[in-house]
Image (cartoon, rainbow, N blue to C red; front, top):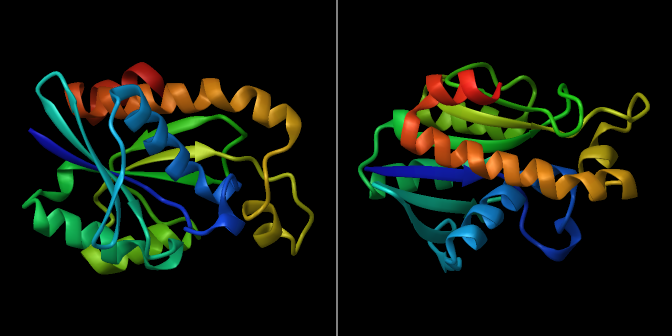
Amino acid sequence: MKFLIAGLGNTGPEYLGTRHNIGFRVVNAAAEEGGVAFTEMRYGAVALRRVKNAELILLKPNTFMNLSGLAVRYWLQKENLPVERLLIVVDDISLPFGTLRLKPKGSAAGHNGLRHIEETLGTQHYNRLRFGIGNSFTPGRQIDYVLGQFDPKELEQLPAHVKKASEMVKSFCLAGADATMNLYN
C-alpha cells in the first residue's frame, strides 16, 4: 500500500533550518533512516521508502509553503492515491515546542500551507502531523519567528522530537491514524 508523506517548508538557502521548515526536517529524517535519497522531480524533491508492506512517497514540495496544495494534488493524482493515504507534516505555533499531534482532519488554523492544500483538494479531511514550534514571539513578530532559526536549547532537543515524528509517520502508514493517535498523541 502506498502513502504520500508531504513535509512542508520553503526551498532555498535562506530558509534552511528555519522553524517553518520542520516538515522538510521530518521527511529528511524518514528518508535517511530508510537509506534513501531525494531526487528533484515535478513539484518537489521525492524519495521512495519501503517500511514493511508500505511504500512511502516522501515529498518536499518546491512550490513554497503558500502553494503547497499544487504539489500535494499533483502527487496524489500521479500515484492515484486517495486523500486518506496522505499525511502532511507541518509546523504549528499553537503547540509548545516539540509537541506532536496527529489529526485526521481539521482547519488550517491560520497556516498558509494547510489553507492552500485545503483549497486545492477541496476538503479539510486529510491527515496532518502538527509539530509544535512554540510561540515565543512578541506581537507582530510571528513571521520573523517562524522564518527564524531554532534557539540553541531547541536545537539540542530537536533530534529526539524529529525522530519521534518520523516514528509517527511509520506508525501512520502501518497501523493507521487512530492507532497512531492513541499511541502518540
